[in-house]
Image (cartoon, rainbow over all chains, first blue to last red; front, side, top):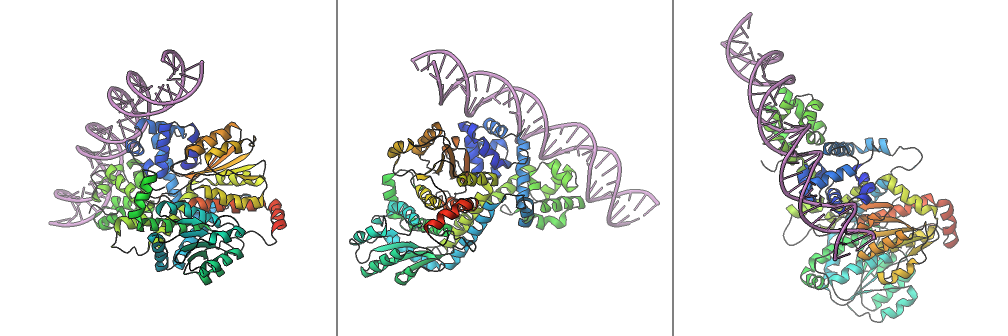
Length: 281
Length: 281
DNA sequence: TCAATACTGAAACCACAATTTCAGAATGCG
DNA sequence: CGCATTCTGAAATTGTGGTTTCAGTATTGA
C-alpha cells in the first residue's frame, strides 16, 4: 500500500468515489500532477468541487492529510525526474515477471511515430489533406485484414466533415460490384502493410483503370500498391525482429483527420453543427 | 521579467546571493523543481539553510512571496507537460501555411504515449494480459462510436491466439440479445472515451449483473463505466482544448496483443500454426 | 410520494507554515 | 586588534490554507 503511485490509488478507489469526488479525480488526472500540488482551494475550483470534497477525495485515496498527499506527489515527481537508467534499474530488473513491458513497448512506439514524421514529406501530407478537404467526387476507403479497421475509423470521422465518403466493405470477392460506381477523379485511400494483401493490389489496378486517384498508407517496406498511387504515406512500423506495430498508421490517420478538419472547417462546421451541437470528439 | 523561468532567474541572481542563499539555490537546482514545491522548512533543511534564508533567497529571485514562487514553479511544470503541439499553437500561430503540422502532431502523440505508460500501473497492465491469456470462458469486446474500431482491431488479432473471442456488433439496440450468452466468469473488454456512450454504461451494468468481469480502456477523465470495471487502463488522449486523439489507446491495444501473445504462446503457437504457416503479422 | 440516507459546499475553526524580528556570529576594513 | 557591517538562524508573530462541522440538497428505495 505504501509504495503505490497516486494514479494507481485513484484507479483502485474510483469505484467508491462519489460524483463530486470523481470530478476531483478527473481533474487531477487531467492535469497530473500539478493540480495536486496547488492549494486545496485552487484544486477545488479548477476541478469543479469544493475544498471539502477535495479533501474527502484525498482521504479516500488513503492519505492521512493533504500535505501527506502532496508529499507523495512530490516524491513521485522526483522519481520520474531520475534518469532513465536509474529508473530502469529500480523497476525493470524485477524478478520473474516482465515488469515494465508497457513502458518499453510505448517507448518503441513513440520512436516509430517520430520516425514516421521524418519519413513523410510535409508536402505529401499536406497534399493528401488538401485533396480530402476539397471534397470533390467520392472518396473510397479500404484496407487489408487488420488495416481495414483503420479505414473504418477514418471513415467514421471523415464522413462528419465531408460528403461522399464510401468504404469498401466485406471481402475482396464482393468488391468488384462496389467498383462500378467509381468515376474519374474520385479518390481512394488504401491501407496496406506487410503481408501485403493481393486483393488490394487488384483493387488498386482496377481503380487506376477507372481513373481514380489513389492515396496509399503503408509501411516502410512499401506495399506494391505504391506503383498505382498518386500519393504515398509510409510509416515506420518495425518494433523488433518479430513484431510490427500499426500505431504509427493510426496516429497518421488521426493527424490527417485533424488537419483535414482544419482545412475544411468552413464547410465542416456546418455539417457537424447540424448533427450534434457541441463540436468534434 | 514576468515570464522568466525560475531556473533562469537563479542564473541571473546567483552572483548577488550570499553564501547561505547559494546553498538554497544549489539545493533547488539539484532537486528541481520538487524541492521548491515543499514547505519552506523542508526546503531549508534539505538544502542546509534556515527557513528564513530560503525566504530571502526566493525574494532575491523577484517573487513577492513563497506561495507566489511556488505558483511559478507549478506553472512551469504545467507548461513543460504541455505538448509541443500546444506550445506551438500558442506561440507559432504562424501565417497561412502550417509548415510542419504532422511533425507537431506526432510529437504530441508521442507525449501521450509516454503519459499513458505513466498513468497505467504495470501491475494493472499485466493483470489484464494474464486474464486474456488464460483464455477462460468467453471474452467479449465492444466500444463506442469511434472506439468500436479498436475493439474490432483487437478482436481480429486476439481470435488468432485464443478461442472464445466475441464482439458486440451493431448498435446498442441489438446488444440485448447478444447478452444472453454471457456467463459468470466471462470477460468483457470495453472501450469508452469522452463523450462517453450511455449505451455502453448500460451494457456494463448488464454485464456486471451477469457476473462478467469488465476490463475498461478509457481516457484520462475516466469513463463512468469504471464504476463497474475490475481493471481500468486509462490513456492520455488530450491534444489541445478541442481535440482528443486515440492513438495512445491504439498503441495500448497493440501492447496488450503483444504481451498476451507472449504469455499465451504455448497455446497460441498451435492455433496460429494451424491456420497460416509463418507467424503473426 | 415520502422517508431515509448519502452527498455537498458554506462557513467557522484551528493549526501550521510563511513571515518578521532580533540578537549573536561571521566577515571585512580601518 | 577592534569597530562596523553584513549575514544568519532561533524564536515570536501573523496570516493563509487545511480541517471540521453542519445544514441544505440530491438521491435512493419503499
